[in-house]
Length: 118
Image (cartoon, rainbow, N blue to C red; front, side, top):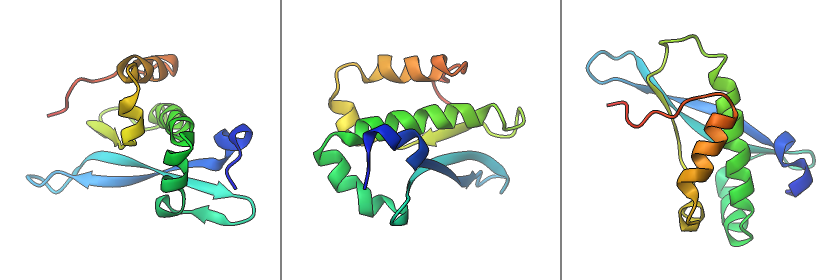
């Protein structure tokens, strides 16, 4: 099903809009990871997360997700969104270098991390 060598092609990103209560206007978005399997089609997180966390494949999936989100950010018109949120597995937080890893991915894609939005 999930083959590490094919992860970049299998990881897809969709965005859930987050509207501001005060204005009802779009303020942010949450990036959602989906896996496209060539045999099973589009897999939902409930189909993947448990196995991916048990095998630590979730770390590679999350890395691919973050990379793709950073690449997609460049295509969003400036001042459209205040931030894009990405949920990460608890396994990611067990790594002692999570902060450095996230900064490295974000900066490696030419983006600047924002400390807060709000």
